[in-house]
Each structure stands twice: as C-alpha cells, then as structure tokens.
Image 1 (cartoon, helix red, strand yellow):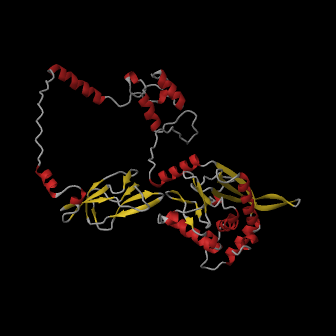
Image 2 (spheres, one colour; image 1 turned 135 degrees about the horizontal axis):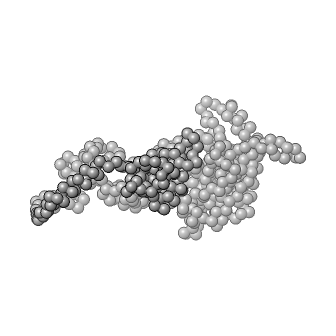
Image 3 (cartoon, rainbow, N blue to C red; image 1 turned 45 degrees about the horizontal axis):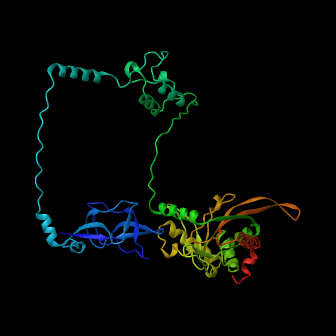
Length: 438
C-alpha cells in the first residue's frame, strides 16, 4: 500500500488560493476515482473537486472556511501500489528510516502512596455522604406565606423576571433561594407575574455563533468593498406602468407554448439597451486603482438572484441583441442555474450594469448597492394601484417606483437623472421600445 497526496489544483484565472467550503468525505472513507471530495469557492463560483484515484482517506487538511493555497496538500489517500509519496518530498529511504526509528520507552512515573484516612474521619465522611444522598435536590417551602430567604441580588432579579419567590423551591441552607434555583424555575416554564391565562412566556438566553464562510463571506466582502470604495448617489423616480402592464398581459395571453412568460424585467432590459448608447459613462466599469473607466459597447446585464445560499448575480450577455422573449428565457435559465449552484464562471462574471428586483416584495423605495466595479444599478420596486391626477382628472393607475444608484465619481447627478427620465419615458410609452429596430 502507498500514500497518495492530493494537492489543491489550479482552478483557473491565476487564482493563488481558494476557500474550502465543504467536505464530502471523512477520514476512513473508501472513495472511487472521480468521486467528489470537497468544494472550494473563489469569486462566488463554487467548484467541486473530485478524487483522481481510488483509495481510503487517511488525512484531511483544513476546515470549512479556511483558505488553501493552490498546490497545498488537501487530502491524503491510502492507495494500491506506491502512490505519489516520493513526489511529495518523502522518498522510500526516508520512509524506511522513519519506520526503523522506534521511540524510546517513556520512564515510568513514580508511584505515590496516598495515606489512608483515619478510621474515625472515614466514618464521618461516609455518614456525611449518606446524609447528602438522602437530602432532596430542592427544599420545598412548608408555607407559601412565609417570607422566602434570598439575597438582595436574587430578589431584584426575581422582580425583573416577574417571579414570586415564595413559589420557588430553594436549595440553599434553610431553603435559601439561589440564582440557580431561579434559573431552574424559569427554565421549567413556570408562570410569572402578569402572564395571560393559558399563555406562558419565558426569557430567552444564549447566543448562536454562525461562522461566515463560503458564499456568505464572499457576499459580505463584496458589499463591504462596494460601500467602502464607491460614493453612492441614489435617484428615485415614479413610473406609470399601466400601458406597459396591459401590453405585457396581452403578450402573455397570446404567447406560444414554447415561449416563456414575460415579467417586467425584459421590458426594463430593453429600455436600458435603447438608452445606454447615449450614456456610455453609465454602461461602464471603473478600475479605480488604475484610474481608468472602461466604457462597454455591449450591454451585459447582471440579474441579482436570491438563492438558498445567498445573493448571486448571473449575467445576461449581449442583452442589446435579444428580443423580449429571448431575454425572458435567458433570465429564467441563468437564474435557475444560480439557484441550483450550476452557474459557470462565465455566467457569473462580466456584467456592465445590474438590475435588482424583489418583485412583489419590492417595497416603496430602495437604495441598491452597486455591484463593484460597475457604476450603476437599477431597482424596480413593486407595482401598486393608486389614484393619480391626469389632465385635471383623478384616475386609478398602476404606479411603480424605479430606484437607482450611481457611482458619483463617474456619473454626474444631472446625467443620472436624465438617463432615468429617458428610461421612464420608454416604460410609460412601451411602443417606443420597439421603434429602434428591436
């Protein structure tokens, strides 16, 4: 039998290290070739690493949440044959030398003879132990009317908890009530002063420690970096989407069976693609370390997607070349891939502007955080019906706020406002969306 040391492979893009997210095996497990061993994460992409050989796991190096350097030893397997022990710095001669070197026996500790207790002292100890065994765990008070024995600190704590001390069994001398007695009484769900009949409340204690690892740590780092480096400028405008919603419902009613259902997002994407060529500073990324703004001709729209593991931003590439149906289909595809954890690195990178939407939970207004190194993010809020004055008359219209944030280092307030006003006009008059060759 030999030992096979499996080192963390290069997972692309010049990554020097990766975060160990989860183990799929344990020491002692028998694994087959290509069986998953562990997951690592870098830049929001989780990569499943499989075993290159069959064997038995004898060593695992690292805990979930730790960073591992590319090329470092991660798993050691016991395999048939010689394995690759020689290539990992230990030759056969070194192994034999280690095998021959036997540890010297440790010196035996000197035995100490403990003195036996005197007969009378031993008898007194046995009697005391027997008396303690017969004593009840709690000394119940004979009369509830009697004043309970307790320290001022215990009395104050009981008042804070709303507990009547005369009902608390005491375990101290002469039935004295200690803090532990009060804790036990509350833990048993006993009634407290002022509680409603049939309803029992108890104070909760304890703190749960949750280690921030994997995707959650990546999200935290990205949010912290964005808020620290980008001076956000928020702009909110209300949009009358009555005509847009009528068009959307009509298109959905007439769509083919093989076409996806249209939501609001494809229309917003189409509006962005029509307006962004006139505002190239918004469809951009900013390398603030190099002091260079990269203005992009293609429109690669990130779609903020909530998953079971946290927020992920898959990307619709070349949104400017897609119609409503194609955009809707691509949104559904990449969002599902993100939720299933199957999105590729290419599908999770390269966005030039991001849309974030909570749908029915969109609220009245939001201040979305820019997806660094982008310089803008757009957030449609929920659609509500409310009375609106139109040409001197009150009418019920479907209204939606459009929240947005811009990097004030790159985008001036005037340009941001003019950009959103153009997007608003297209959403309020959806026929304009299709007049540019879309």
